[in-house]
Image (cartoon, rainbow, N blue to C red; front, side, top):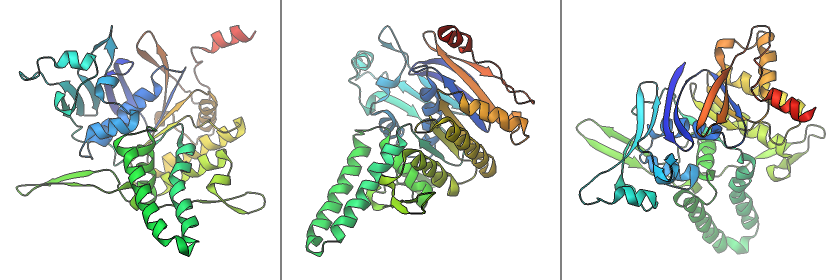
Length: 363
């Protein structure tokens, strides 16, 4: 179990929970599922990178003054995210030369010098990977580079254009990192590439005792990954752009989790997208098996109860231990509240709080 505490992050006022090996966040829209998952992801990643603010802007496209919880328009600093025994925090600097800093925050006119950011000193996880809800669309963007380069290389007369185009694409990807136009595309592309190649694309920081420190920057466009899929019936090989979205989603999760270090954190949003109920069950079983075999920690956000019933079935079959799974139901009033949904050894599960309301609406 890993203890987590989050305060003043988006719609979260003050939450505490214990994470198990498999963690499912379920509830209605805008109840804080992704907010909580992203807070854990960002705080963990802050222990390994040089600039926590760059992680946030790639996740959301905005700075901390937009992410902090607000009451009647007033920001409720500090932001606190505690994981195990380490704490990530964002506080406002109350410096004499910036007496108007609180007013600047309310107007969202703050800059880097207005925040005092303390990164997580130590993460309980070896690494962290984000698979956002739009991951299939993001993969198509990542694949845009090799596709265009293939087309240009097939035309010898376009050698000069190929070099120019490569530089332009590189600049485009760097722009996604600096000014995230499609957040969290930059984070996904970085995590996806690192999982497949081992190449860490975000800035890495380090220091040596009595010798100094360093920051290593690696451009996103240096790594080019191509993906080919195979039709299960005809065995025809196809580029990923022609593959069904459901198959593409399978390959994203499977490819990312094959080679990543044990004890890594995986955040996956809405595994039910692009799939019919049978495929959701199959995908859930695959996720559980991979997480347990690779000793990963999973945070899954979902609107569907099918992953829960599938996991309950695995409990009944003895393939999943109750202590390895936790399910949290999310609601807002007005801030995020969570309640734990219990599993039982016979494969049954506590009724979700909104089940009676749903039945009333239907019948």
